[in-house]
Amino acid sequence: MANIKSSKKAIKVIAKKTDNNHELKMRVKNLIKNTDKAVAAGNKEEAVKNAADLQKYMDKAVSKGLVKKNTADRKKSRIAQKVKGM
Image (cartoon, rainbow, N blue to C red):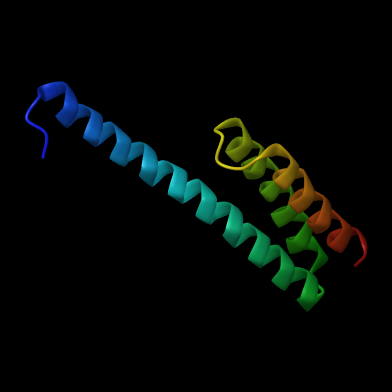
């Protein structure tokens, strides 16, 4: 454990940022899974809603540097194709 006050604070800040980043990444993964399930079940309304949320949170992850831009674009494109092909 750190002895310096600023180091102790930095540890707390890093832990909070890590939790927030993990939450955002898990939200994106869950949206991808839920969208795939909705497409497989033929539930177009839910699939469209999840796809829109996915684009929003994927862009947020890109802006925070959690996901590379091309990776995000590729995943969004694949989901959009699946939803459109329903």
